[in-house]
Length: 307
Ligand code: GRG
Image (cartoon, rainbow, N blue to C red; front, side, top):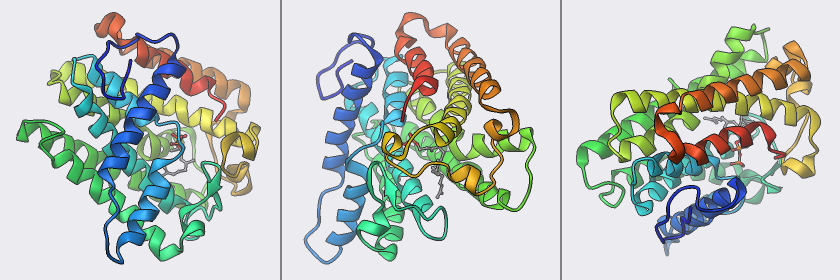
């Protein structure tokens, strides 16, 4: 699964870790090219964008976009651009989430958060500009020759990122600090905040390959189940991992009194629930046969990961 330019079949490499590293390399090259430094004073905001987007991160969302697109033999030059667009939205959300008005974090991906490395105003602008750049990348013919397909990609990402998706989930998360959420409410919050962007990464891959409605629905189900498992794993890591493992502060949910599946039911039941969700994610891939092996491996990785 080489994604640095040369085409190859999915699952060529020996392990999921190789595949993930391969996509990360490809997407880094793509992000570097998509975020050139301008000459004037505006250079500072692009430096902040590049600081937050170019180094670190697992690149799980680009991986999902590329592996889903691979099901339909989409050229990697297209799927990497789409993956880079989703990663830009993800990086914007991390920059804004780290701001003093939100989570107020000093460390992200093992180094100072954007507002610490630059300043708050620059960090806000860098997040804004990454969000808007994502849509301009999707609107470019290099992402897909069909204008209709590009419009579908843009609409899908806008829905997943906005008030009906990640931003809505973040709002619920902020409100949750003043109320006790039940299990259903926690699941909804997390599906919006984390699940929808992971799911749309898969849907975008399918859209690039002109997948039919049923296949797109299966990719969405896969992504949402994977997202729910990913979030439980994240909550477990917040409880059990160290700051140096994660490259960010830990123990924040407990300190903020935030209800999670883990705080409601304890780590053991949370682990079982995450495994059930992984099984559901994998079951949603049945129509795709062997070509979906990298996506199956990604589902297992979400709960086994250490960062
Ligand atoms: C500010 C609009 C807005 C949204 C913020 C993404 C987010 C919503 C908050 C980040 C805090 C958090 C712990 C979210 C839940 C899980 C998550 C998205 C973790 C980070 O994603 P990873 O693990 O990060 O894929 P890397 O660094 O590997 O890309």
